[in-house]
Image (cartoon, rainbow, N blue to C red; front, side, top):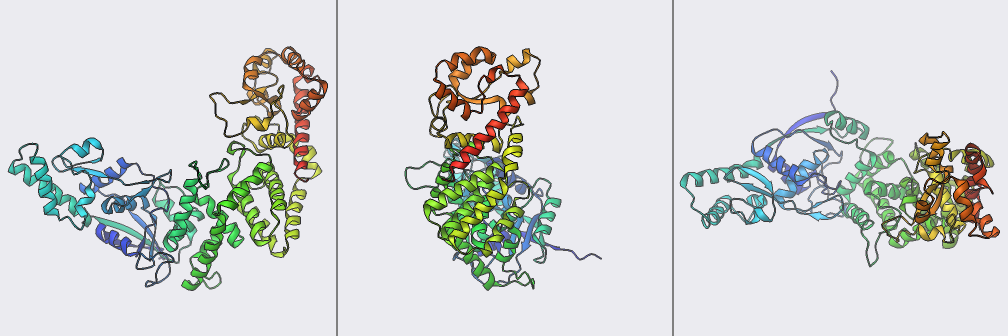
Length: 583
């Protein structure tokens, strides 16, 4: 007979809520932002009131005995013995409504969910202004379980309010009291809980979760670490959530808001771990944070406390606003202007890890660090270094730091990786071929835009700098800068070329001002280009055509020849821009 990894345990709702309050069960109220709509919360209470089943809960024994206080959390009396794997939204709904505790929404704002109940019709609804005024409703059912309001007094108060508007028969009064009493007894609602053994690995727990919950999303290592933070270091998790919220909200004062990334906590935890533990694979760090000895498999509170202290110190630097914004200056120095130019958040965050390591572990001078990280981000973003098996690649990059001891060695190490990646073959063969795509969001396209910024390039057939029109603070009905088909689609169709994958190749696009884009329309290049060329001197045209990868008289070339030539020239522009970062 197979040895099971779980046991089935029965709970009542009141026991669940009591254990959550005492800390026996870890319910991180911000494990994830609360995503259930209020109507779904209403339906949950309605199902329980009617005695319908609402599914299993899935808990995981954390492997550490009772009797110890949580790190940094004095409100709880115990270290949670059980961690919630599945049922988070249901238990959060019940706990938040019955105890009147605010939840965190996707925008990281707090909201108190107010569910109303009509004892006459025995119906639930989401509270609103109209329901507040309706005497037939209890506008917030949390009062039913409030310690200072008895159920009989609540019923009397309800009936008094109702009678102030109309007569109430004895039969109706009995029905109302029975309904309120039935609502009160939801506390006795039975729950079936599957309790997974502490010996189960996180992979097994995730697999169990998916197998019994077809509507759930696959749990990842970041989910497990964030859950541990909520249980053992709630202030840290709260700080992480607040930082993420700030990145989304402009502020007049000091704030994490920026024009490049609005990260989620599971993304920032990777920076915490990468900087603090020099690891990219979250699995091993997760085990260490649980207090597990990777050799013996035993758990230790002392070990867990030590590792959480490492995490605490790391996060203090990760969330430091000065470091955060100094890092964004590296992106600006690399020619990137806004989040629309960022194709990989993970490349950006991994670059932030290397920035923090250089600043705090190797004391690299600020100007040197900014220039180096600018080159590092440009190179890793352009070459898609951290796509696919990004944890494995980053783990390798971080592991080599064990032999690095000085700031000069650190800078040399990063430059060495860049040079090994961006070889002559890359510049001459790989990079030009990267332009053979019609994708509107690809690293090579934004690497090219960044190079144009670095070269202080002007918009095609304009004296305005591209960097000025890529300013994220500019807001208008029409984009100031648009990509235009150099050989317009309408013209190409007339000469028998209509496949989108060909007409929309990156090498057939150039940045122009939107008014010019409209004026050019579907005119053949031979017709519209000479009119624009006449506006500029030979020197101006020479520079402009270099920036935009265009040979002289390009509009007289065969379309396919033009594409091949321009791909090579655009690659040279990227190389020229990148070389500026060495200075």
